[in-house]
Amino acid sequence: MTDKINTSVHRLTGFQDDKKDLSLFATVPLGVEELTSMELLKIGANNIKAGRGGVSFTGNLATLYRSLLQLRTASRVLLQLAQFDCKSPQELYDAIRILPWNEMLTSDMTLAVDCTLRDSNITHSHFAALKSKDAIIDMLREKTGSRPNIDKKSPDLRVNLHIAKNHATVSLDASGEPLDRRGWRLDHNNAPLRETLAAAIMMHTGWDGTVPLIDPMCGSGTLILEGVSMAVKQPPGKGRRFGLMRWRNFDHSLWEKVLGEEQALALNCLTVPVLGYDKDPRSVIACRENSRRAGLEFLAAFDLKLFEEVEPCNGHGMLVLNPPYGVRMGEQETLKPLYRKIGEIFKRRFKGWTAYLLAGDLELAKLIGLKPSRRYVLFNGPLECRLLKYELY
Ligand SMILES: C[S@@+](CC[C@H](N)C(=O)[O-])C[C@H]1O[C@@H](n2cnc3c(N)ncnc32)[C@H](O)[C@@H]1O
Image (cartoon, rainbow, N blue to C red; front, side):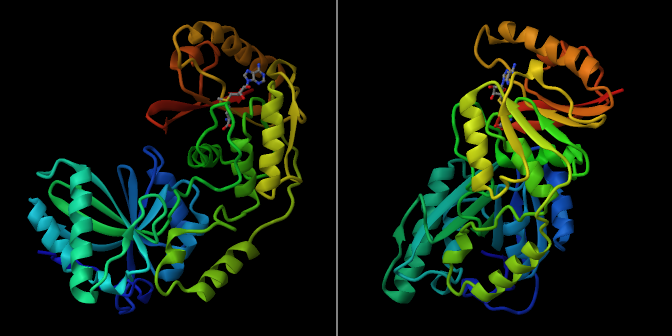
């Protein structure tokens, strides 16, 4: 039986609005939970609690909108509807069926159900999603005589079911497309970082636009563009469409108000050079195009250059880089000279600078030959990496 239906869910879903806060949850890549918590604090969220791979928080509708517009390290934002114990498929079906889906879905809307499972009697996420979808459709058929269609790719309403230790949480996915897809990046072959990971790296560096920034191996420009966008306080969700915009009673005027408030804080210039270099001409073209698409083309410059030829543009500043690391057999060997060179150039040329390097291979990183003053654990997909800080005195 559903023991906790969240009656605070606003009229946007059809649920009653009793002026209580919404229960919200940001799913985040492993290792960035604390950074996301800090971001949530800045946007005025309450009851922020970080767990593994996610952060729960509460707030009103404006907080939910602000979280979609402003969170840089989160993958999705979920609006929690109900929580209940569930030890069997029948219990799951019964608890989902009594939720007021008729207030959230009409027959001309489309639906999808996602499920994640951990340490529970129900062991197949696909089966649990199917059972939940059946419960929703059966409820709607009974109440309204009609049913919504299923659209797994781009539904009007995406329901998220999470079952851990036989305790289920049912939520609506407010994000739609994952939040890391900012919409400005034209991907190409050079292993670009996820925007959420690049944002996490730039947050760890603390770069705030007051000292020069160089990425001498910039690939698609993700680190530079996330850093610049953060320094000028550009909302990463600006101009994007989100899942909740297709919900019933989406509050367009509140959205415009929140967007206006966030945009009013944005700056339109930086007073320091921001430079990205790469040895691959396709990267440089992609970076320029990406910076234009991100609306940041006058704030950073990208050029073709070998790392070995990059010179500091100032007596102090920040270097940030994500050199290639060998994923295929034999690659590690061919990359060794590059890592030795990185160490030499750091030492000889960049005295007075601070460098941050994302290392996917610690054996290669050791060849830099300098002692990092800090290390942060981050995950690039499944790969555990280290962000290493070097003070180049
Ligand atoms: C892992 S990718 C960087 C991806 C980037 N951080 C992003 O998110 O798009 C490494 C980049 O280093 C560049 N690179 C490798 N060796 C280089 C060198 N000696 N000089 C300049 N660029 C180099 C590659 O062309 C590639 O674009």
